[in-house]
Image (cartoon, rainbow, N blue to C red; front, side, top):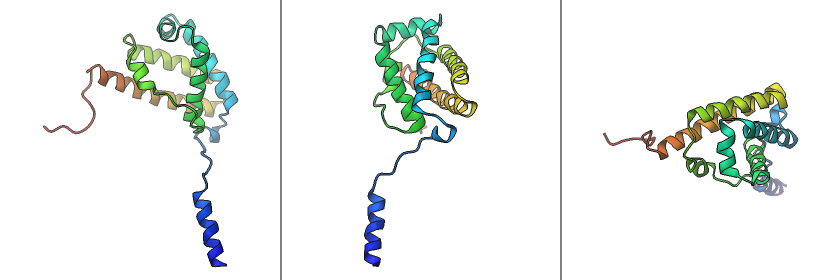
Amino acid sequence: MAEGHGRLARRRLMEPRPRIGPGVAVGVTEEMIGRLVPAFYAKVRRDPVLGPIFEAAIGDWWDAHLAKLCDFWSSVMLMTGRFKGRPMPVHVAIPDIGPDHFARWLALFRETAAEVCPPPAAALFEARAEMIAESLQLGIAVSRGELPPLGRTNA
């Protein structure tokens, strides 16, 4: 009897557990992501500052880009693991973006999240967007030689 219980316990440990992302607790769903992403990027495309940068980078590939960004946010908020891209090199390759662009991006994102999502979900989307923007800005600055690489130095 005890041996059978041990096998059952080992089998349970080896079974993959469902991944539960932080968005689940605040009601984030795939449908919500599917409303937020297109609504946000519709504003980005109309924005006089951000629109030209995004149009130059994405061109006629908006449908694919929106699908990729839905996968991205699904991975961030629901831990689905659907996103397989590498955003840092893509953003580093755009020479015209800087802190003012990220500030505008975040302002539009906050505005759209507040319109599309209930307050707890909007707050989590905003917090994640802020962390992502900060990470991208640091990566871009390091790649441009504007900041020293993070880590210990031999001084």
